[in-house]
Image 1: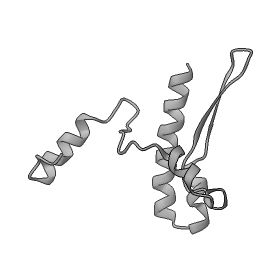
Image 2 (image 1 turned 45 degrees about the vertical axis):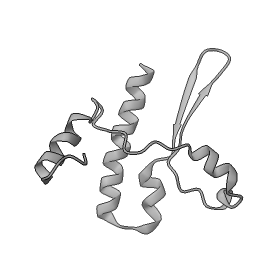
Image 3 (image 1 turned 90 degrees about the vertical axis):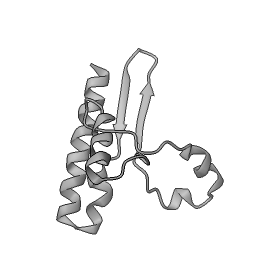
Length: 99
């Protein structure tokens, strides 16, 4: 990405790494470690969580805090539309992953 000199080049490089679900990894961090160091985290959850629960009977449950629900209190229709589109992609990705 740093090697691109134009918007078109950046766009092409970005599109090359978008997966079949229409999503790409933008940043990878160990947020769990940061949360453990922050005692106020429980009072202000601000991340999207995808939770996998493996049950003893072989069933896997997925839970997802939708972006739309996290952003709904702000009441911005344009932002909520983008969030809903992202939620649809993440939910489809989870459905594809679980068969």
